[in-house]
Length: 305
Image (cartoon, rainbow, N blue to C red; front, side, top):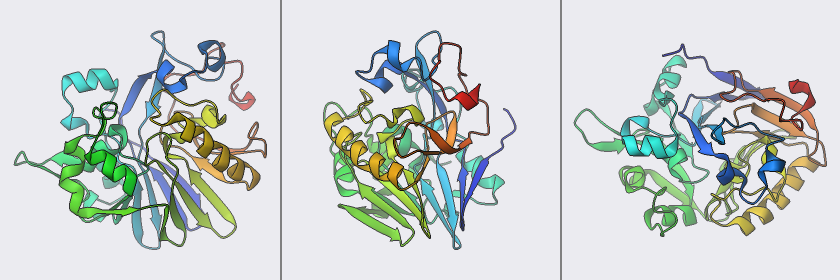
């Protein structure tokens, strides 16, 4: 297994670290929904099988002596061979190893902020211990999730049954705190319910002085999904996604928010101009992309060559 190095970003007094979750391949058609391939393929690369690379890297925020974690990746040790195949798993989750590099363990996480509870975000909340029992991985943490999302996680419908899994919620249920419209986790960290990608999808705002960072959950899977109409087929409520993206992207562009990403294989952080067209500032992912750009992506950012 390759040596593990982690990417860090300093946002004033907040330190962000991308932990190493599992890497996966997803059919690109599902990630661009109704957008024709002849259009999106000019912006983002795939392999020969039309699969798009996705990272699932939880983001650790260290601030004022507390450890906050955004989402949890998979616990790949729990996955069956069928699940691995269907999910396109490329690598094992190395979240605990990542924490150890920082001198931490899962028990040191104080709060877990769940943008939503789909399997690729919530699977890593639980694991099977040495006694063969399914238990919480972050046993000392408060786990915050929107109340609609928490209800739907425990009561999946025919569409969501394959991603809202009992094994990912049952061991943590006594740790969960829910909210309705929004919650100020602390004055500098806010979660806001948007719906869209899932019924309880939430975005996260980090605030330091006059500066704001925004994490859109899976409303914005990658930097190219900033067009409000580019809504994946995996969004459970696509019209709500469009409305939420129109509102929050406009606010973010006009107020110079910096976006930070969970799935994007190219960018960790990005800021765009007021029209959302051009990059104003950015931080590339520190590890090489799993599927690099080719000559076909003639609409990729100019600075990427």
